[in-house]
Length: 391
Image 1 (tube, one colour):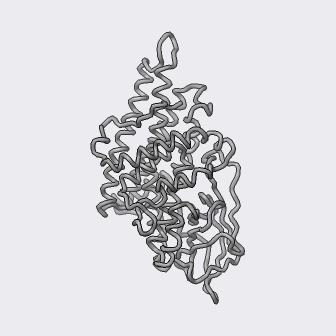
Image 2 (cartoon, helix red, strand yellow):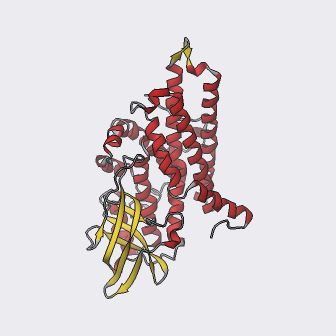
Image 3 (cartoon, one colour):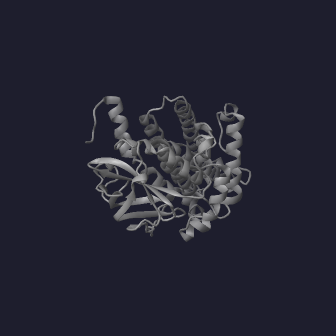
């Protein structure tokens, strides 16, 4: 199990360059995870349920859309502080971070960026306080890595738009009061706000997951749904718009998986220092120390990477390809660290008394969603060679 006196992992003294506000925000979320998430998360993971009772506390901390202006319910914080929020939430569980990440980066961001003033004023404050829950519908049953192939379509009719199609692997879908749905209108991708209760709209929960079990994952089905004219996102501009949203989500993931890696490292370090074999702690063996050093080194490198990425984002200089590099790298090292930690805990590593196996199962999903390792590899490959390896 993780240390009761968890203080994070900070080998290069990053705390010295974080501002007081950034540290205060991080520590608030860290305390919430310690006091409210960790005591219950294994139970919810086993039951395959999201701990909905935590939503008001998440909202009270301001973790929904915190980088947005105060007038729309945000806190106007910078992207270092936002990243630290994601880091701490995912230390608790990927499902908790996913909930907040979707609400912020995939629902509030597109409404803020592509919505009308009326849409922003109506939805954003309600989403910020958790009064309304949102989800993001882009991925389809047959189109994941190739979102441009989507077959969900909208047709202009009297009074609005007729929406038909289906979406898959939608976090928060069954819980959501509003879905930001991407569909082709006259062959061009547009965003629509589909409200719960719309005739012909259903969001059945997907069952049988062995990963992200403490998260709600759903299908979205649209059968002749009439979407009012006022619910189209007027400033969405083709496929580029949902891809901009994915950049926001990937940014949060790059920070989030650090929390997962840090928790697994902390669990492995504490366990190996106390587990006695052959008359001494297994942390005294060279092979164990090599694994711990690998974990610490990769976490430290990843921390420096996302910190600078945050600075690029705050200065308006961040490119989507730079986010791909961070998402790709940090998910890979988090998966390696979780796997190593599981091995170092031996048979105990599969018990829910320790967080490691749950995190190892979760990172399998997190490494895949919002762009697989392979897709981010090809995004970077095209960026550095000028040659697209996929159509």
